[in-house]
Length: 166
Length: 166
DNA sequence: AGACAATAGTTGCGCCCACAATTATTTCTG
DNA sequence: CAGAAATAATTGTGGGCGCAACTATTGTCT
Image (tube, rainbow over the protein chains, first blue to last red):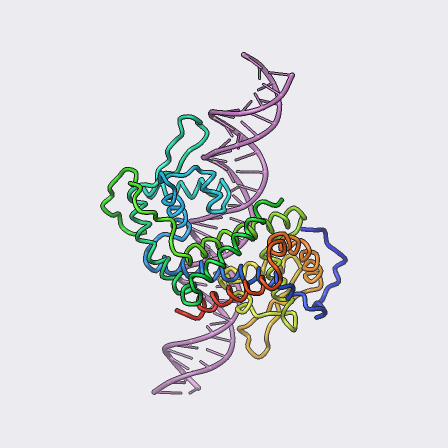
């Protein structure tokens, strides 16, 4: 936090409208709120069904989508957009739950994989309908498939610049 | 977590593609990843500038957008899409930092307001350019204002169903 | 080959938020 | 009006993630 400015105490005089800005800013606010709302509902639905949290689903889904049902730690961290440190512990939990296992690369002993186990695949299939139901409610009710595709393209484009640029 | 199923140990046989689904599902995955990526970049930029985290900005911006520069705790929690318990502590931190203060309602002694202070308004104005810069990079570089507006409308619609429906 | 940089992953620490239980106040009901 | 239900906010507890420091392995440069 920056050093104390000349702190003129007391309530701020309601001057210019600071909250509302450009359409881009509005779009971002809407993006953040929508993400929070939808993922919150998913978490709720999963908890109500006695299932593990959304992060577990995303991890299982990511691994399952790989050809050989396994993924390097680093790739996984990128896919879930969390830090490598965070990923290590997330993987720890799924390993402890018997859903995945750590396997190793014999050509490069630094890398390790998270490999899907049978129990993980089964749990994933159990979680899919719950997540899909929320998705139906939030997306399918309002968007045609074509619109959803456009939305995805737009978001992918935004993320592209956000990742590449630096 | 559900009770142990008949745990057939061993790696899962790569069968049906579990990861890829409907356009709606793809759109959701893209939404989640884009949110994480962009907000991550903002956090980074704020930290690099020696400024407080994004949550502080969102709270200050929310209060500043109110007519009388103050907001009820409940409304604020809804605006930021966090729980009331979480909000209480977030407000505590901003109060301790001298950015806002708690004020009370004399017609209903249950409600309390978070009221913007001068220092809070000043910090907000200091944070706006940093956040806007990231926004420029992520959104303005790829989207016209019209596209951003459509994106916002689409997301608002999705959030509408996600919030109303139950 | 030997030293230095780069890469992959893990660990310790701390912050932040969700959840549930609690307090305080207001509104409803008989 | 007394008691129950509803509403607003707070507190304690716990888990999850980011950050920075660390270990281990591989690549690079002379």
